[in-house]
Image (tube, rainbow over all chains, first blue to last red; front, side, top):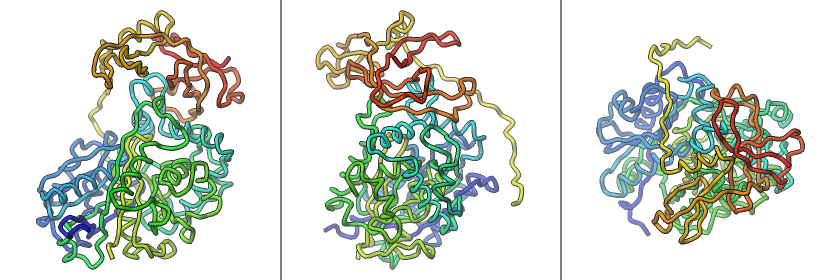
Length: 393
Length: 143
């Protein structure tokens, strides 16, 4: 059993509205998440010993966002920016947690932010496409991000005799919960028919299989266990984090129906938390659904079901709120939006809200086991972070 | 919805990288000779594509180049419909991952007369090609 000063808990959360946010600068957007996180934790800037900022960047003008945001927000303690592509937020969480576990901090902020709309769409498609293996995949063959996940989708649909309509079920679920989340980019329902009618981006994936371009920020205030108990009646502990890196080059993946890095990260997380896997231990899941196929692969890589059975979970609505494995009740990346560097922290905010029982009407899971699981992938399986959260009661 | 006011950047950055290829120049020479090549560690036998001239397992430079015969089977594919800005002149294109007879997987474009006939497991040929812009590359062809 770990003592309180060997634990780290989330004691405050903040989340900006996600969407096309050309009404604010990157610094103003960051403040939109940091301010409520500080207020929620009941601390001020001078209490914070360290902060990290998950950010991919390139499409927005500030190269050193950790400091420009910190300056706006009145933070002057040590800081850094973390990059793990779409898992930059989880990397930010890892660094902030480690700063506390190492004894260097008592209170730290982990935030994530992305300001994608500061560049035109063409530039964004170009930049994300380069985030695979630039030299061997982009330079000659113009890979795009949907292109990479479409390679998985093609293989999965063929291997497990599934249809594009099945994938659209993930979009329908995402939009249902997005419609109930006031912070989501898309707050409207969709249907399999509407999804099937949307244009192909990279076959077999369509626009409605894809997460959108998003501006957004999220922040959590973390505290050492003994400090957390004083600050909060409802601390949410970061019980364990597992992480792994895959290959950059797609040809070096030995499987195109799942992400090997996700599986290794999940195993490490369960081992560190002393859990026997995902199936019986969690009330709520946040999975990395940058595309509909990614959500299906996540169910399998986390070990909720065997390979090839993820589609059936969707068909049976078992990942809706009242199903066996409630997943992405915030709308997921697909409907809430996917501001690259903010996504990992947004997932942490969501799990904290769920475990506290503070999710909005219609999307609060039934919390019995007191645990949530977060799955955050960077790149096309380049980085994987799986994090176990618990209420600790 | 109010119209958001933005300041259009007056500074333009042209990003064009200089990518060192001295260590793998034989790969590019091979393309000009019609060959697609990888490297192999002479000590442990590990094959590398993308090629690297030092084996990270054995930590030696005792590696050699070898030419792929080009026989491949299709592992997975996609037709990229929304293409990056720097590829707009290509229209849509098919990207495939092929498993070469030599046990190495490669990602490349797939050329075929009939896209509707593309099937996982189908046989393909990997060939060095000269692109219309004048530089050399490598692509799969359906057979």
